[in-house]
Length: 373
Image 1 (cartoon, rainbow, N blue to C red):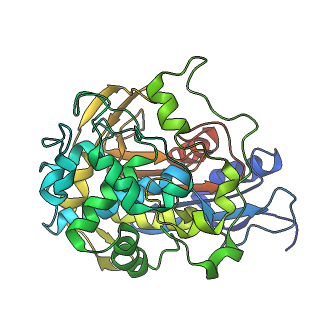
Image 2 (cartoon, rainbow, N blue to C red):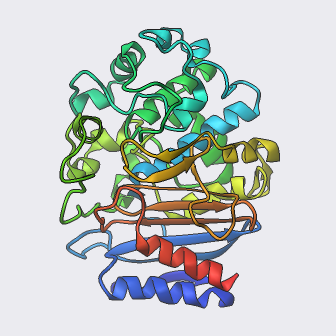
Image 3 (tube, helix red, strand yellow):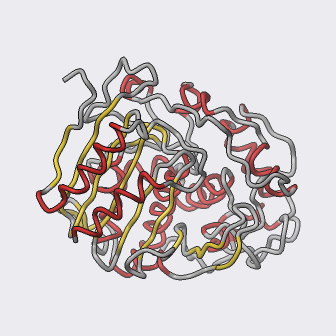
């Protein structure tokens, strides 16, 4: 079809989810989008529709993928959880055990768990950096290893919007000898047959939807704190950079992932089902539940809202079941993993809202799922 109509399926009991998805497109809340849900490891909803560009010349197809910004962090966290599940990484250990240079400037006691929970005091770079520097892994990780924390590590969270990917990624690289994107691809995405990439090959560019920037760039407040401004503007980035080969090809484990709702939901079925997905045992149940261990709670110094972080995910957050993990990306993408109901949801779209942590389009779809359960 060439009209951008909704494709895919939703089991009968989830007809309301399909209706909500169709309404979002019809009302213009979405230009192109995908939503997927799994229950007990079975994919019960897999929908897509609309267009992959603002001009509505390319349909959003079954295999359309898109940059999901910080929903990438859920894949980075999962990769670290996998390495830990194998006994190679101890979240309670000092980062310097794996990355000796990191001990500089008062960081000898900073734990890997602090990196996972945005509480390491490294929410941005003290040195001014450029967009080009983001593609220079040795440079930006060395700067983080050398600098003094902005606040006492472990005392508060302050969203590590860009830096978390480099910090966790470098720990994984020091342990495994492989980049985080490579470990993710070889140990998670490929075994599960999932179309999510941290470092996208150029051959896949034709499938990528264009992100449509929000009408207004989000600001944290009328008067940003120095900490907020540093995280948001060092370096300054335009959404259109996500259309560049440099951005797509680089491994940016905090913000650069490219995938769709199907890959988000089907990968996180692993966490929802005790380490088993697509017929494969990849992690132990205890290794999955490790993500639920609370690390820090309170008003986040960057997001300026109350959040409870476990290992790599926010926990609970008013969801129907307490053992729920979630995180979203700038513009609206979202991953939710409900370990009690053994369900996972993924939402990915191209029309961005001004939010940094998910929005009502994704939550409306998730609520329609819970209502049908």
